[in-house]
Each structure stands twice: as structure tokens, then as C-alpha cells.
Length: 139
Image 1 (cartoon, rainbow, N blue to C red):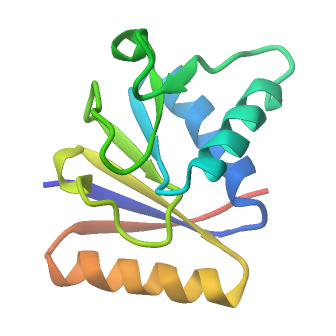
Image 2 (image 1 turned 90 degrees about the horizontal axis):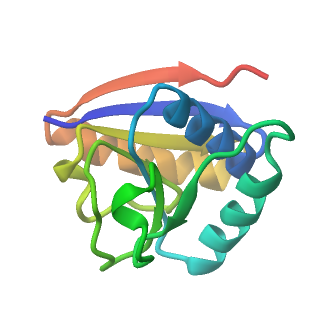
């Protein structure tokens, strides 16, 4: 069963997502970064290019020819995914295929709307019996 980690109170969700992607790459773990909004993935892609000045996190879109060999995949609804180890959800609702992954990462921002949407996702997962861990975001 998928293990779910919530990271609470990230000041900048995309910046924290870059941190999680870099950590996954260093482990190494294969990561799918999901959002139903392609513009969110485009901003995340740009941030990954500049996140660390001395390191690079290899990443590409799910449909790219090198996706099967790339450790970090950016995906939206309906994309064919080359691996199912860890998913990072940048959407407001639970991803449709999250249960096919070993782990799911959820980031909760500091604004009340984002917290409310995260509580709805938490309740959805909890009612279905998923193991959920809550982590505090450290600066």
C-alpha cells in the first residue's frame, strides 16, 4: 500500500518541491512530479534549472524520448509514466493513479485555502486506510 508523506507549511511550495526532487535524485529514487496544470509544471521545470548552482537534477516531461532513463519526470493527467516509485503531487486534489506508487508526497502551503484543500486530501487518504506521516517543513 502506498505510504503518504505530508509536508506542512511550506512558504514556497515549488521551491520546497525542488528540494524534495533534489533529495530524491540524491537517494537515488525515481520521482514523478504531478500536476494537472501544465503551467505549474513549466514553472517547476524552470526552477529546477536554477535551484542549485553546483548541482543539476535531471528531469524531463513524461512524453520525452528519454523519460524511461530520467530520474525525475514531470507529468500531468493521462501521461504514460515510466516508473512508479515516488510521486510528488503539486495539484489541489489527489492524483488519479497515486495508488500505483510506493510513496506519495504532498506539500501544504501556508495560506488557508491550500491548508483546507490539503485537509480534504488527508481525509480522502485516511478514510481509505493509507499510512500517513506528517512532516514539518524546516527552513
